[in-house]
Structures are given as C-alpha cells and as structure tokens.
Length: 362
Length: 170
Image (cartoon, rainbow over all chains, first blue to last red; front, side, top):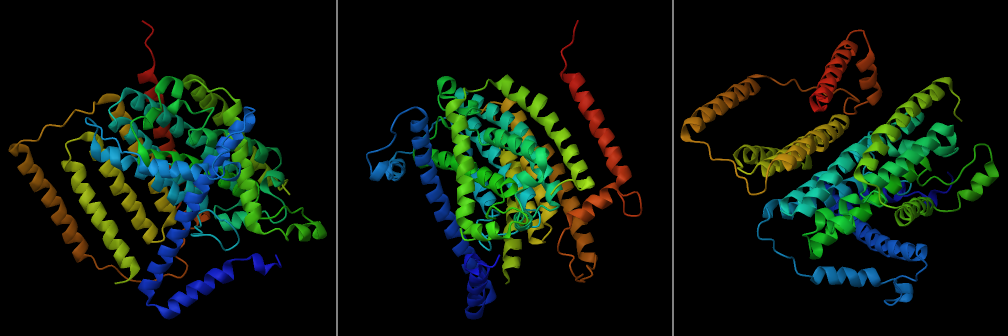
C-alpha cells in the first residue's frame, strides 16, 4: 500500500500525540473516549437513518412501487421526518408492566450493538479498538442483545410480546452457533482473530476466493444465519405482524420503539460489515495475487469506499431476502438450523482444516 | 487517580451493588437481570487486565449463555405478578452470619497474601495459540485429560437431557 493518503494511522496518532502533549494523561484518555463515542454515535444514527430509507426504497423496488418520494429529493429526508415524529410521540405508560425491566430492555439491545461496532475496522487506521480476539469479541457482545429482547417481551405483560420474545430467543440462541462456526472456518484459514490481521491477510485475494469451496459455503451459511440472528425476514417470526401484532416490541412507543428499530438495522449493518471484513476483504481493495498493475489501479479507490460498498452490497442482499422469501414457521426455522446448517458447518470446518493443513489454499 | 483505577472502582461498585440487589430482589427476573450486570462488569474487569480472551469468554458463556438460559426458564415458568415471599427473621440471621463469615475469611486471606509484583514482558497479551496448544497437550501444563473428561461429562449430560425430554411410549 503506497497510498499513505488513504491511511488514517498517522492522522489518529497525530491526534493522540497532540492530546497527550497538551493534557494530563487522565484527561487525554477521557477526551479520546468522548471523541470516539461521539463519532460512533453520529455514525450510528446516520447509518440507521439511511438504512431505514434504503429498506423502504428497496422494498418498493421489489414490489414495483416508488416508495418514499415526497420529503426532499427522492424522499431522502423521509426518515429524518419519521425520526422527529418518533421523538415527539408519547411514551405510553403500561400499568401492569414491570417498569424497571421495561425501561432497561431497549438500552440493553442498543448497547450490545454499540459495543460490537467499536471493534469493526472501517479503513486502515480507522478502527476504535483492535482486539487480538476481534471476532470472538463481536460474537460475545452481540449475544447480549437477546437479553434485551427477552426482557422486553416478558416485562410488557402481554401474550403477544411474550410469544414473540420466546420465539426470538430460541431463534437467536440456535443461530448464534452457525454464525460462530462459519466464522471459525475463516479463522482457521486466516490463522488469527484480529480484525486488522484478517484484513491484511486478504491483500492478495479475499478469503472467499482463497479458501475455495469451504469458504464459499461458510459465507452462505453466515448470510443465512446472520439474517436469522438479526430477526429479519424471512426469519422475522419474532415480530410476525400478521399473528403477533409486533412481537416483543408491541407495547413500546415513541423513542423506546425507535431504539429497537434502530438496533435492528444497526445489527444488520454490523453483521454485514463482519461478512464484508471476514469474507470479502473489508477495506482491502480487490486484489489478484501477482497482477501488479491491476492491484495498483484498484488501490486508487479509497479503502473506506471499498468497505462501505461491500457492506451495502451485503445489506442489499439481506433486504432482497426479506422482500422475496415467505416467512418460515418456527419448526422449519429450527429444523433448518439444527438438521442442516449445523452439520454442514461442522463438516465444512473439518474440510477447511484439512485444506489449510495440506496447504491447498492460495 | 489513573483511568484504570477509575474504571476498576466503577466496575467493582457495579459488581458489589448488583450482587446485593441480585440476592435481595423479590422479583425473580429482576434478580436475573442484576446477575447479568454483575457478570458483564466482571468481564469488564478482565478487559481492564488485558485478559481479552477470558473477558470475551465471560461475556459469551455467562452473560450471553447462562443468563439467557436462566431468563428463558423464568419466562416459561413464572408470571409477571409473582413476587417471592420475604424470608422470615429465622432465615435472615443465619444467612447474614454465613455471608459475613465467608467475607471475613476471604478478606483475611487476601490481606495476608503478599501479591508479588512483577511485570513479565509481553504477558499482557493472551495468545490464543498458547491456550489452544495447552488445551490439547499431554505434557506438563497440558489440559488434554481434563478436556476429555469434561467432554464425557457434557455428553452424559446431553444424553440425560434427551432421555428426560423424550416422550414415553407407554
């Protein structure tokens, strides 16, 4: 990578040095935390708003409609108007709910997705925390979100909420296995769990190409199971509106509902960026090992653009799933996971380990 | 006060407060939620020690696994209006003595023990390769035997669970 202009490392280190030179160490750390927190918050809100707009447009496109087209050019400001509407709505007070848990639940859901976003590499050097166990960390913190959903369903004191929460819990707990195991396949190939090292390892070809068929199978399984883990259609029986009103968030209104809504979209963004990072090279441009000239041309496109492009491609695929497949029943959902995806995944890991041992990968 | 000390104080305060709330709350799901906070804060302590692997395992297994299982079983069995009865004085006093005795022994041991401070270079990174190797190694500091024994235990538990849950044919 000769294009240091696209490398954020020196820029972030310069800020770090500036703060430590001018402030006592304690306040430098505090200021850095505030800066990163604000950046993540703004990014989170903006991506969330954009994804809601994108979902409505993609949905309209799939159903041969126009979609939002009144507020702003191509209806672009529609979701901002929706946000103001949600902010001003009344927070309905539920008499027989467990108020403490009812109020905590949306925060647990949204904090879990916040914690996950901190470990995602957006570009070279644009990375809040580069854990040596990056993938494991993301799996760990994203498994906390389900607690919020279960609490929301139970504390609402509503049968639809409770059934929705139970379904969603069974679904997330079982599909977490497939998500984890499909990532393990790639960890075997990469030899590391650190996100920066995984991205660097794809400098001469993305893992989906380097790992032959097992990597491709793992990618498909990851797409299916992460769609299920984020409670999105065709796996959205936790909030199947035709049978359960709105599932676990039936009783929520106003900004608390918006938290669940935003967290759902951000979870989709997080799994899409993990898929992009682990299978499609993250911010690494499209490189073919040995083709120097071609690689050089690809380097002109900034890494952040590559990252966003790949992530939104996967988000688009997930939206395509949602608007073209019918919803699964709960038994079909569990059969798919336990009888098909899990065994395929286990065999796939063995094949991948064999390929890596024999050195058959690129 | 360094940021590390501040975070340590915050995590310990969270652990102490929510541990007490866990055992004193009379609503069972609230108790489970407070337990979740305790376990997450413990994970935070591991992160503070740069023991990232253990921290992530703590979050996955305890916070994401065991607490979810506990909450799941509460969801299946108890109703929102249920409240546990307040224990009577005959139970509270012995319980207090037992807790105080346990705390005294622990604190006395910790205060007597001199923690040798030595910084080993590069020891603040948990290398997963090392963990994985010692897990299947049969040499000194190898955990192959416990690993296998635990897997047999797990297998037995799963077979038992299936037999318990199976429908009887008669």
